[in-house]
Length: 177
Image 1 (tube, rainbow, N blue to C red):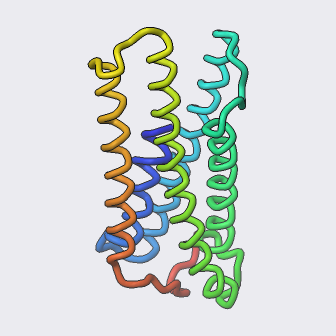
Image 2: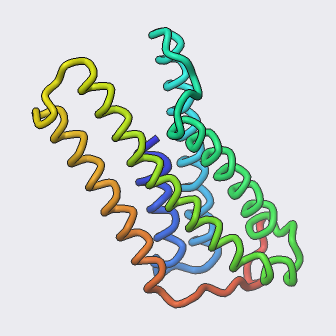
């Protein structure tokens, strides 16, 4: 889930704003990277359910789990909407131009929620590890905390890189074939 939603999802966001490619190529790369992120996030959730079931741990018992299900669902809806309106040209020019700021806003908000939920997941994992007897300042705890800090910093830099770029305008120069 970390690799999918945070790393690849962040790359997908930055790709659309940063790559010096034609708009149609940037759209395709953006779409494919987000599809990979959704697939990996879904596989991660399935693996978490399988692990919980095998370990007799209840599913959907924490804020982290409920947010995770909500985020991956909204991420999938965002992807389907983006594909339908912007890539497959299911939306008219007026719909695309009115939808673009909202698509960008919801995409950034979902990414921020995913990074925040990852931090909650690290905290939950650290709590379980400490409950099983590891030292609060042991190497495992330091690794979990270090990974959480790096994840949050990566998310911050993704958002900063996107917000520092000029706004993107949708155009009609691309038609899906």
